Amino acid sequence: RIHQLGTTSLTFHGAEHSRFNHSLGVYEIVRQIIDVTFAKEPQLDPLERMVALCAALLHDLGHGPFSHAFEKVFGTDHEEYTQAIIIGNTEVSEVLSRVSDDFSLKVASIIKKNYPNQTLVKLISSQIDADRMDYLLRDAYYTGVSYGKFDLERILRVLRPSPDGNGVIVKYSGMHAVEDYIMSRYQMYQQVYFHPVSRSGEVLLWKILERAKKLYCAGYDFKVPPIQVLPFFVNEVSL
Image (tube, rainbow, N blue to C red; front, top):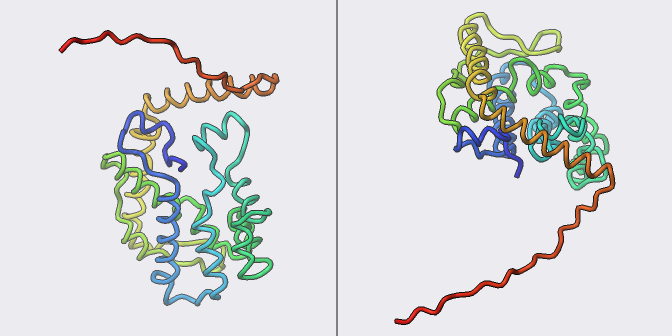
């Protein structure tokens, strides 16, 4: 129930998709990379594969209402909240602990970016990762623009795990697809994410949240008064 693009739907009215949609997409891209693209590479331990897939699915779990606008006003960090949900006394943590006692800690460490296998970290958080690749294509689709389109299948085919285990590399033959991805990202920021109407809507939202925060900190009583029903009269109509 958290919108992926916040106030962007004020401008692009089809942009009603959620972070749940996006999380499923990131999960699927990471699964394809591990099971298909990296299939001929040194095999991942089955447990590590599950750690990466769970991190992909849960990477945005800590987003609050209005996502980044909320974070700006209240000084929160969705990645820190994500880690707290994964390792805290939560239903999510309980499910993860069924794998092993330290499984939730491993998933959280990918979100925190200090997991020993940095290749798995970079699959979810880097300059060319499953997160960015999914939201560019998904946001372009729902906003109805063509700016965010790029050749995802080609990029997936040319990715390789770094030999030193510290990231992901791209074959030289796939550089044109990567350049196209970079330009698509630039154009989406210029034309969609930084659209003046969306940004002005976000500023208004900031001001509303800042006012609510100020009143709350001052001890204002937010109880809603009972609704007063005003009397009204209906003129009789003779048939």
